[in-house]
Image (tube, rainbow, N blue to C red; front, side, top):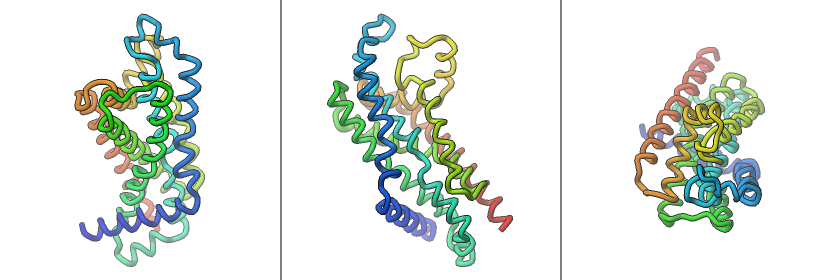
Length: 258
């Protein structure tokens, strides 16, 4: 366990140094789509909140706790590139010869994935608050939302790692990033279920991102510790476990072939 913890921290530090050399893809790009959508959607669709089926909140208040999940959905997986490069370059084989815990290469990268999404999440929330959003639970609610986004990024990254390990190509995992768009648009991130057509409402109800968004929205606008938040954490935990299992299985097969 001590070796795993040490390896995790060393991998985290290594990823942080790589990101410091090229911060754009790691810190800036994840927040840009969500920031742009916050400004544009509030300007264009603010009157949607006047619909009877919308509810009693303004559109900015409704949008910001949902659109912020795009930081994770469109920004996750950046560390999969270095994972594929390390596999291709023989770094994992050297670790195996040194009897270093291979799992630390995944856990350290996942930890960095969570941390690197926090600055972008904070910027998107700040912009949203400037454009009329509210944080009725204050700083505590904002911190909960930031934690949910970080956990969502970790959960979503598992599939990037599985593809990176399978292909050993640093570029291939990034072809998965557009998957974040349907996950966001077919959820309650941008509009409530009540104003969706029936087919979209059905898909949104089955979409795990909807559960996360509902927890985020409750944390900012409703009860800080709510049933929605509990379901969000449960869904993210299950999603993370599934992603890690996929990545570990892919890594075990890769190591067996080496």
